[in-house]
Length: 59
Image (cartoon, rainbow, N blue to C red):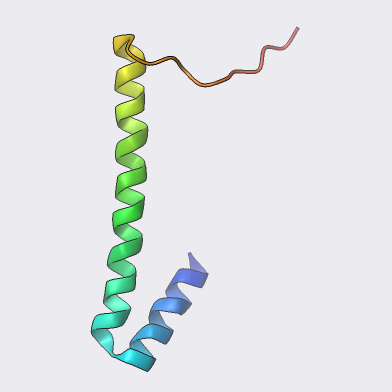
């Protein structure tokens, strides 16, 4: 997160505020997409349409 913040500040300093904000919006979109995928995967597993991932079984 700190690296992304530094990148956004550098983009804003070099290319203007819109470029810095654009990099932050891109990061937010990626995180929202990832969270949405996790939620959809959970719903599909509960509905029986997808199998859960590999699980380690301790013996």
